[in-house]
Image (cartoon, rainbow, N blue to C red; front, side):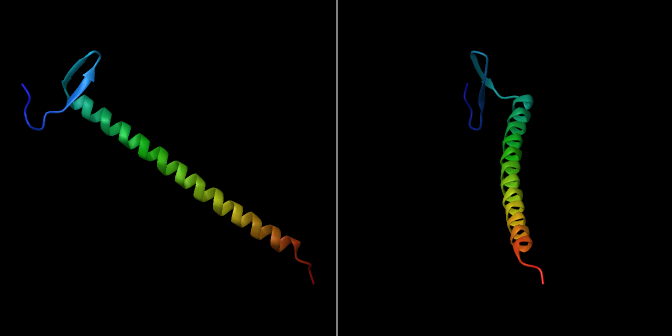
Length: 66
């Protein structure tokens, strides 16, 4: 019944060999999680750069003008 390389997934209450649809779903879930991670990282970086830019602007604006 079991062979080397077999992968089983749950379909309701049953464990069955995975299908192409199961593989596609797994890949889609992995990609979605990676995208969420990349978005969070990008947002954090953009926020940090914006904060740095705003701080630089405040310093520049607070300097007395000749």
